Length: 106
Image (cartoon, rainbow, N blue to C red; front, side, top):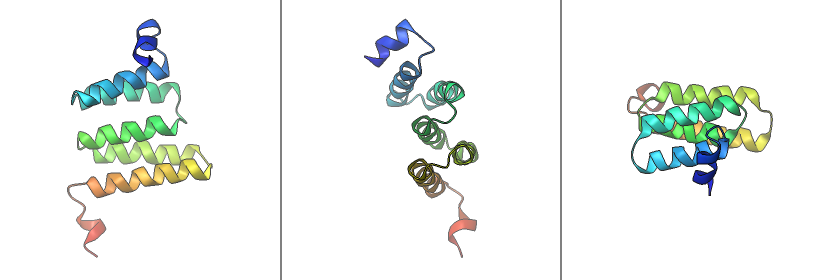
């Protein structure tokens, strides 16, 4: 359904999310990140988009960018549930980092 929306209205956020999901399933993480970045630009406070974008960036091993996406989202919300979701994603990004010596070798 959302893919159909995307064909009718290429700028629709749900259509963009569907397209990003399809690209992710195909292993096209860079393309998925570009689509999610576009979606984030349309709805900058959308936590689900930020989480998906951060996850896509992690798959590309772009940890600094993924962290920045999450940190920016944390600055935009005071909602406890949204902050929890974003902090959860931030933890996931940090766990996935290949070089995390400064975090874990205490």
